[in-house]
Each structure stands twice: as structure tokens, then as C-alpha cells.
Image (cartoon, rainbow, N blue to C red; front, top):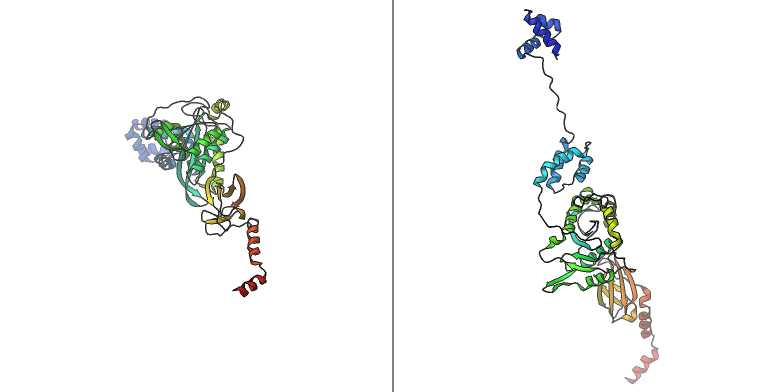
Length: 393
């Protein structure tokens, strides 16, 4: 490439009448190079090579995540780093910033609560993979209104027993109880809304009394009263379930959830409060009430009739109870972990591990020892009794 000094020589020699081929020979370049320089009237300008963006090959992934509703730059950064991105967060934020105007949203009025006053509870669901199989996961999110610290628990259904279990696990995670719990209108908590206020599920009231909080319900068609907690449902979907796409088991899923809460959710800087969540929780914790001495029993409760053979029917199988209870009514407790407990007059009389329907009856020999003794006693009649009956017939 000709330098500026070379062009000045070309211009001077050409002005003196020197032929272009001789100028080229003098400078050691091709005659056409001399001709182009004279025609251009200047030395060639070096074209600055445009540097390729490190983000360029990953923009399609970024756009896909934005289209799926994932707008958090930290989550997106982790995803493209897994694909080989070596750039920083700043260039990613600069790429996302102009697109935020396209992000769908709804305006809402935010009500702040005092420390220790309120916990908001709501269910969410998402499809993921557990043990290699596509699985619908239900997760209960419970968030403290003041500090925004939250906890969630994943399970396979949203019934009353799992709702109570998820709430208790959150209270244990926080280490205390708020003065009130605000719930949506699921039947596990709210049976109906009347002019005088909501009618709560009796068992939910029992749970509230056991832990010492006041139950509150959203007004019908006003679920956004729980806006803080509903936003956390989306936050978990867009953060935790983007980072983790598959799990070995339900236990593995909930272990990862608590690890993620401690490593990412608790230390985060809250966008609205402009405070670190776990630091704000430190001010809220002293305002929480104490946990009760005994944990509330969240197991399923049913009443069953004991057959004359000393068995109760539970979920397609039969389980033994002490033979003297044949013909009686008993209370059955079915734990979420798969245990069966049978009570009579508030006394535990039998305990079994649940079996899937069709795997056969479950029997503990000591339960029916008395029944067998009675049965054998009937069969041991002296032969003379039957001979005497024959003579009189």
C-alpha cells in the first residue's frame, strides 16, 4: 500500500514529466498503482477493518429467550455462556435495552406492607423433565411482603394437603410466622365469598390457628391484589426453570430449588426496593412470630370402616388392622411421603407403607392372631358331639 510520502513523490515526479512506468520502477510498485494514485489525487486511505461483535453469533439465542419472556440479563448471559459466549454483560445489556419497549406488561398499583405483617401465597405450574420424563410441576410460592424474600416448593398436585405442606415449609424456611397470610381463592383455603366476607376452609382455619396467623383472601376477580407473589411465579419460571431444565427426582428438584434460593434469590438486589433482599429480611425477621412447638399434620384424613376380616380399603388396596377392631370405624391418615397410619379413639393402631393398587393386600400377622385363634377354636369340637347329634336325629 502506498504511503503518504510515496504519493508526494509520485506527484512531484509526474509534475516533472517522468513517465508513470519509470515512477513505478523508482518506487517499486506496479504502474497501475501509480496511475490510480494520480487519478485519485491522494494516497489510498486505509480501510479500518470492522471488528466483529462477540455477541453476534449469539443474538439469535438472545432474541429467542426474549420472545419466551426471559428478560433478565443474568439469566440470558448464563444461557449464551453455555453456548460459548466469551463477552461481558455490558454489551448484552446494550443489545437488550432498546428491545425492552416491546416487553408486554400491565400497570398495577403496588401496596407496601410493614415488616412481619403479610405473606402472599400463590401456585404456579410449568412443564419440565423429571427422571427423563416430561412432567407437569406445580410449585407453591410464598413471599414476605416487606422484604420480598420468598420460598417455593415443587410437587405433583395442588390439593389442600400440598398447599398446607408448602406453606409450612416456607414458614420453616423463614424461621417465623407473619401476622397474616393472603391467599388466592383455591378451595383448599377459600370455599366461597359472601357479603359478610370469605368463608374459609375449616382445615385452613385450623392451620392458621395452629401457627397463629390471620387468613386473608383476595376479592374475586382481583387476584392481582397479590401482585408481588404473582410476579415471583414468573420470576421462578424465567430464572430457576431456565437455569435448570431437568431433574433426577422430585427430591433433587426441591434440593436445587433451596440451593438456588440461597445462592441467587436471597442475595439479589431488588429492582423496586433497591436493597439486597436478605439484608432487608434481617430487619423483618424480628417482627415474625415464633413457630409452634409441634408441626401441623398435613396428611390426608379419611374415615374408614374395618371389614369383618380385619382389613381397611385404602386407594385400591387392603391393609390389616388389629382384629378386635373388625366392624368398627377408624381414622386414616395418609402422609404425603407415602405412609398410612390408622387411628382408633385417637390411638395409633396400625402403620403401613402404601402400595400401588394391584400389588396385593398388606398384612401384619400379629393383627389377626386373635382371629385365627377363634377360628381354630371353632374347628376343635370333640367328635362325640357330632355322634350324639346323629343318635337323636
